[in-house]
Length: 353
Image 1 (cartoon, one colour):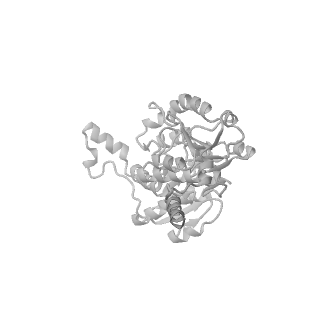
Image 2 (cartoon, helix red, strand yellow):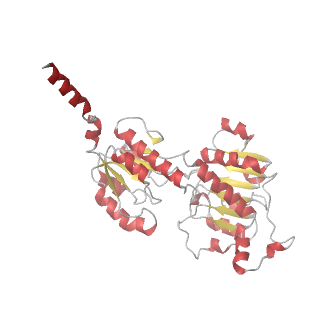
Image 3 (spheres, rainbow, N blue to C red):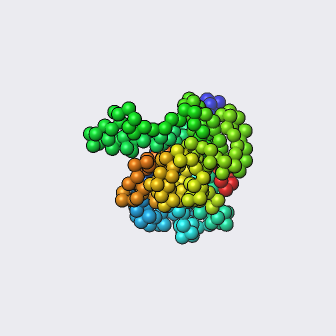
């Protein structure tokens, strides 16, 4: 009998450990809204839940049409939604989901397209993915500053035409970052990461504006100033603020008129931080020197848009966080927020906890 007991014990210990809570959560469905969500995030979700994923791309016309139609059919009964899209979350989609929807986890730092008032009214939690993308976006911010200041659009056009005007000693001259005043609107993770990368460019000084002073600013000797002071004194103006009712079209005819003639605007936030018609006029009339944009309204910007006719505008197709490592980090953080929410734990990066 003793030998039999030992044998049974050995057999018991060799059995795989089954997490009852995980088995229970396998009944919970999580919907991933776009077919290009990183596999590393999918794997985290599949360890715990039943994962549904759209077959379609969540952006552009496909995101509005085929993707949205499929999401409407998939979302009933889902407990969480991972949102990968620049399109807004609609009331209709939330109605289709049903009352068991506990969380929207957006795989982005910005959440202006997540219908925050509606989520709040329904008691649905919201998380985002800040910080993990700050370094990658800051690299693009610096690249845009250089591209606009050193007149990349005009110089690339020379290469394409085979006429190198830049060979002349006084032709197609750009502006230095060395000794310049750089104003950062929104001194959060992206703003601070950009300042960190710009230190090596021998910048003259940093200014920043926002709702409050940031203790981290001391590391860069950055001065907290009113926004009007920042606009009038800066050679480079970086927009790294979220899009809100307060910041929408913060760059407009009135604020552009306050800027230096050599001012360069760089936007890595959201397209609607800028009134693009007013920006076009200011650039065309050489009221300011140049602009470098990673974001626009709409996205993609139509190829015949008037902004694209300007030689002093450098535009990228919203690639700020577009690196392998960063997109994996974003996907994993979005997935981990879902895990925490559906296990009743605090969100890692809450917007609506």
